[in-house]
Length: 229
Image 1 (cartoon, rainbow, N blue to C red):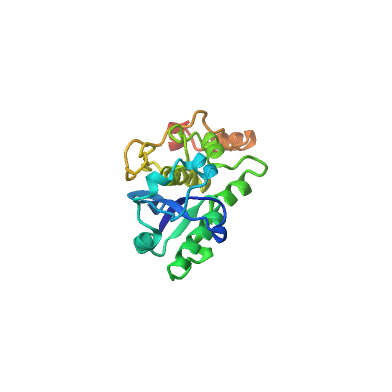
Image 2: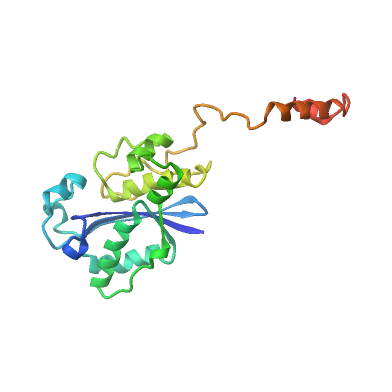
């Protein structure tokens, strides 16, 4: 199963008010393991960057001036995501921007049912607890020390680790970079599964332990179970 973990940075909150996407980052997963393939693109929004948005991601007018507009990169982005499920934190935000950009270049929208919202999953799994990326990194012990500003590729790499924890735990072969930096491609080096700080407690009750011991005792001294006692 192919999935794309995706994040965007924008000039603001509302595409209908003229806000635009300025960065897209995405990480490919196959059967819940990273393949090493990423997509990363800065985009000229064809408008000035508001100060409040600049404070969030640090992408200013001078930096974005020579970057391609969405109309130029739109097809390459669509080719990368193809028909995969899109794993997004606060999916409604990113999806409304992506579909607005696609509408403006006369492309069909991405169906909303392709989006898997990790924010909704986190709120359902941990009701009443903070569910931001930073809060979930703290909960799952994920290193986000390089996240001084929002960045679409770095955030999508972090989100991939969070997503795998939310659906049941990272796989032993999961490899994601936490040091890609701006403008670079994501890499597949440096992450390995870590042992838990505290071992999980046994799910066996005392009654179950006693019943098992009684059962093994009746099997005699040569019972195989005695070798694993």
